[in-house]
Length: 155
Image (cartoon, rainbow, N blue to C red; front, side):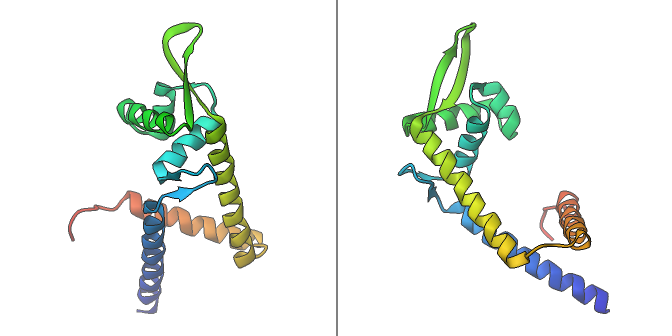
């Protein structure tokens, strides 16, 4: 019975962590540009920042969302002055995306945000042995496989 109880304790902590992450992602944040950006917006900015000159189709594939959704998102980010659209000089029908200076500020601010998170993780975990690291990766992979195989329907 102890093994089952231990798994229930792990599941309780995991669910609490997931709930906190979901709640945190719902709150828009300012990454230095003066704009409150939702998670989907900053992830789009990050993808464009790492792939300057990317077209809408490639961006939609990269982020795993529809071309229509990417078009709407980039229009919204362009209106906020974070993304610039340019016609491809070699193909007049193709729109290429890059960050504006303001978008670059948000991009760099998000990078700093992640650096602070990684620093906190390192403070909380310290230096992991190879065995500890392997165990954590094994655990996270098992949780991912559990979620991937979940029914997600009413219980």
